[in-house]
Length: 38
Image (cartoon, rainbow, N blue to C red; front, side, top):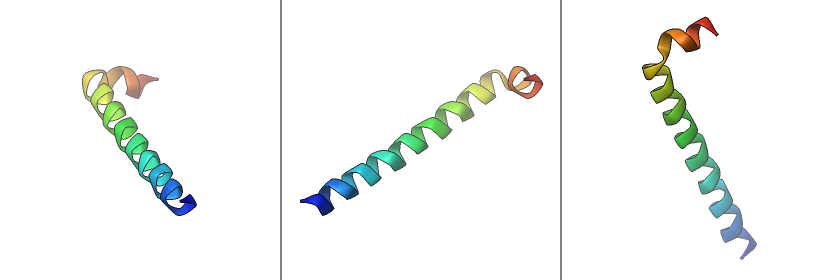
């Protein structure tokens, strides 16, 4: 039970990181110059 809970948390962590990098990649593509200036 605890093992399943751990892998689910790990999966959510990986999904969160993937979504975050995708989002930052998209916002960088949209506002590349703004992000680079900041």
